[in-house]
View 1 (spheres, helix red, strand yellow):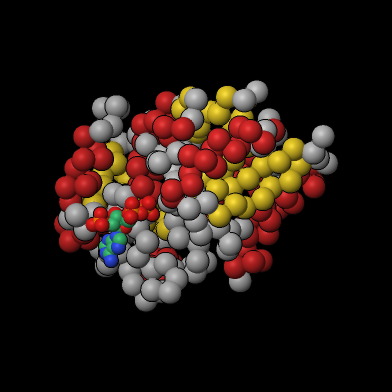
View 2 (view 1 turned 30 degrees about the vertical axis):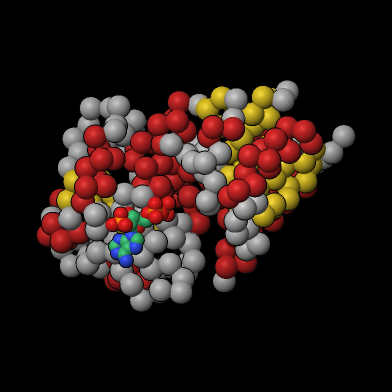
Amino acid sequence: MRKLYALIGCPVQHSLSPLMHNDAFHQLGIEAYYHAFHVEREQLEEAVKGIKALGISGINVTIPHKTAVIPFLDEVDETARRIGAVNTIVNENGRLIGYNTDGPGFVRALQEEVKVEVAGKRILLIGAGGAARGIYFTLVHCGAERIDICNRTVSKAQELIAESDVAIASAAYSLQEAEERLGDYDILINTTSVGLYPHVDEMPISLANMKEGTVVSDIIYNPLETKWLQEARTRKAIVQNGVGMFVYQGALAFEKWTGIFPNVQRMKQIVIQHLE
Ligand code: ATR
């Protein structure tokens, strides 16, 4: 029987996940269909009960439900629990198990697209919101020399560092402090929404002190290349946009559901075609 997979969130009408997953099912000859459901906050619990009642095989969870969904699940894996957010649910014979593939998706994209090894690197995360949490709690396990966090609200960066279960060198900075010491880092990662369409002229921090050859990664993929990444490219950085993180989080979710790691290059093409 054809299996059903779904995205729950609000809004979901512009999501590229259905295109990406349905194409992968088709390519692999898997009898399955992925549908995006608009679910309001107050209907989340009912929606999760519906997943069980209808026997939906797997779910992606997006804004604003990634944290709120946790109490309604039967089990949450340790990484997702630490991150405090679930973006992927597997329905195992009626038991709903929550995972987070956002942070791992980012790290996988960094390794596979930029071919950079995180081990031994000095990394600066910009931002301390939900996206930063996922990336930070994944990166701390990857052997970096240090991972600092700068944020407009410095206390949020401090809180994030204090929550880590891994003893790793990390400091919290204001955006200005980080700008001054930018030359100390091998990898810069923007996890904020600064530069996201329609605010395309904004930049999270100045790159004036960045050294050539630094890896500069922005999790934003609309626009495909933010003004910040364009500036980094001009300054001879190795740049990466957010398409990789989006595609790899999807590919890792797909693998949890089906046991098959899909063709990420194909997924990437589909996403880029629809964004250009
Ligand atoms: P997400 O889940 O996408 O990470 P979030 O949890 O709302 O969203 O976090 C947004 C991040 O972008 C935060 O780090 C936020 O900084 P604050 O913690 O100080 O709010 C950052 N951010 C958003 N708008 C910003 C702006 N105009 N300038 C600087 N930082 C900004």
